[in-house]
Length: 285
Image 1: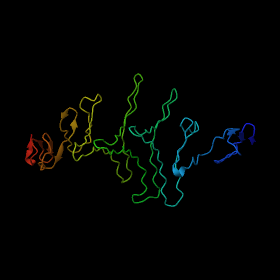
Image 2: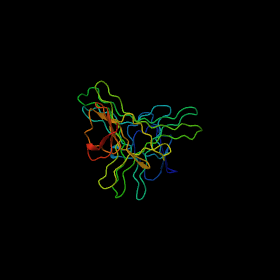
Image 3: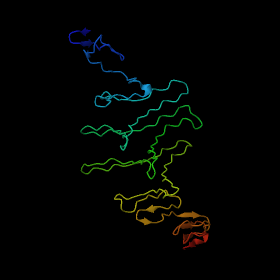
Image 4: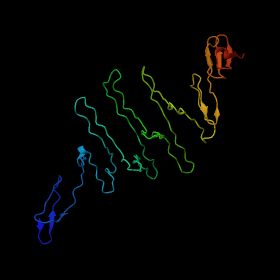
């Protein structure tokens, strides 16, 4: 309804369900809403033209907040077409411009109440199909990959895992644990693999083990070492040796000086004094 004296139009917005364009007759004017546009209480199925990648306009604080005290989910709809892969969900920070860095992605759990623990962050791969056979139906993996660098003399993105700190009196340090899962039946147990990177022209990567203060020799639990392994410890070189054994004199060439071999048939004890041939094993008893 137009008011000819004030050039002002009044629009009742209670029934607006889609975008509309209005033109005031013969003049320019201001549209005034008689009530707020209702808040959406159901699922948000579209924001803008999602097929063209239009951004969610967070003009009110730039934060999307779900209802309090309820479990919230942001997900891609399930595939309903036969043999069609589920859609990928991508959460991506903005690119930087010029000499500025790109934006970070931060995922934070909620703080605890005055006497309770803070929330955890849990990453779960999907459950494999129940009817898979012959190697099909694996559970979804979790892969952390640092960013790629294309600039000369620069490196790819690091991946760091650091346990939380404490500032309280007598607070405990948090642990970092890596566990492989158990196999069932005739299935093998899972492996834990730690492998440094190789290089064609530079130094090969290494695995460093440090004591708690970072200055002493690392403590290494070697209970399950079954063959000779070489380790480089901080501030000193050395060889960490396991005893090997066999029936009869050793026929192999030692890989380092100071290795030991037990002849379980002749009850002889050998030590290595060189690395040239099997004759570098010397009987010690």
